[in-house]
Length: 223
Image 1 (cartoon, rainbow, N blue to C red):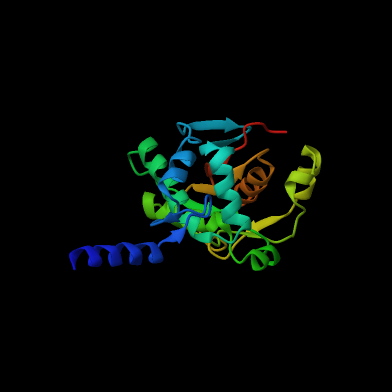
Image 2: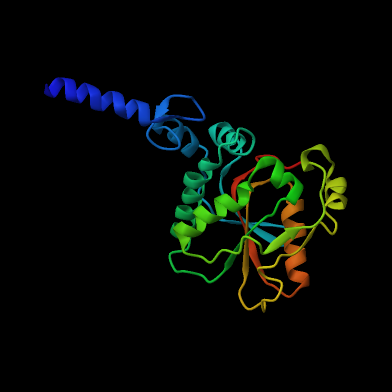
């Protein structure tokens, strides 16, 4: 009887587990242990890296399993992946900043038409998980993408800058707030930095101090 019960419990556990979105193996969590180790291999020691006038704090390198996880999150309708990924970002932030530094986290927004098409903004989901881990305040609607833009990866550096001119404006969460606390931007990937720079300029033009941007992954080569 005990053997049958153990067999039934094991079968029930397998039924309740969902397939890992990266390898399709059964997993009790969002990502199986094997793929978690593969993603962790893409992690770097996060430090502030100055990119022009905007410091960048990157959790990992945009390659391998981390690149696969980001693609699954964004394009395979796997929004639940943002929870562990954002938590890992938050853990790295806490290790690098043991003393709580006041800053408001603002995710890079998507245009409303693109967000409706995808169903979510991956930067906002990552930011929620990140803020749960860091206890930093979150303003999901701190910025608004007021103009739809072309995909950045199809453009040259000059075209990317032109593409993002007047793309952002203050969102309702910051529109009537005094700029007393610094802003920490957050996004999934940092490539050339054109998007982050445009978002930071919008905030700075309204008197806000931008501490930098936290990203899940930074491209190995910036074109």
